[in-house]
Image 1 (cartoon, rainbow over the protein chains, first blue to last red):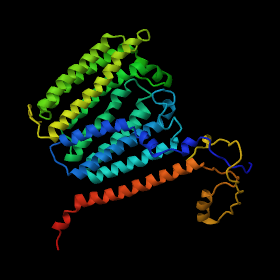
Image 2: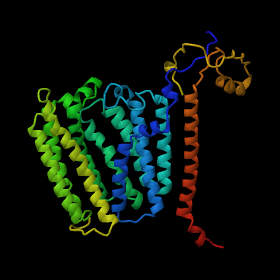
Image 3: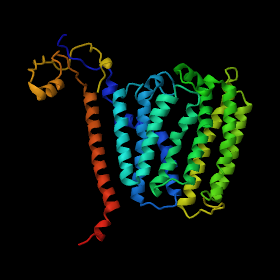
Image 4: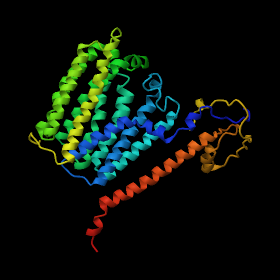
Length: 316
Length: 92
């Protein structure tokens, strides 16, 4: 071998900035995780010291970021194929895969440790399990093997309000599991709406999303079925006393809008190659689904953080 | 930092003339086994970062230092918040 100096032409990898690592943590997902966890923490019947509560939420955000980094490390091969994900830090060559893995593992340990110190052992255990569930069960196993990937994998995204609840109380009660169920049932129609217009990319990457394996018609039918289940389920917190009048109004109006959007998608030919204009219904439903979940948890936050909680149902 | 497959040959003159690596004398015993495994192979090859890369590495180092410092402070304040009140109820 000659005595030549080797200089990296892939300057980007060695030039990765702190912002690239922030992007590795999926900040948009993290913001939803923080928001739903805060709702769980605030709605819990036990008050937490503001500082420890803030640290618990911070630990949860780190845990979410760790899971995101591990996901990006493992999925860098298929992320590089899909236009929606090709600019992510690993496939874009900004961060080396091994660095993403190390970062994810270190952040996982730090976040769980911080949660155990700030909150309760149960909250830390649930956080560790949710990171494992997202990174291993969903990303490494379900995502590439079954069309039900989003259905089962949705559990990972449903944990934050439960963790928030466990951080405040040290246990998990019925109301916390209702919040879990709400996100769990909301996830499939939300993601399937997205997959209706990204199915070609998923197919190219070999990811068996529902439109890829069962077709657009079956996907639209499943979207409607899940929306018919999740919208009445969204009213359940009112019956248990977790949600009050404000929550009832938001859940009723939001649920109606969400259901209307799902019916419009069902009646359309969204996702079919010969009906490109109909995809607007799927895009509209995707947006409405985000607004629906945001509004539900915002209502819970407002009712419990401010003295505006007027319960209608009996507490469980 | 760099994967083997991501290092490409640089076309042009090196920024700084590389010196041939000196042969590493093997050390006896366990210490030698550990230390020798950490030595670079004396192939004469080395990775030279550009000015931009060096600056980026320095910035990353600063962020890591800042994050570690913040973590230590966070754990300290957390401990004081959760356990500080116990000082008032201890036996004197």
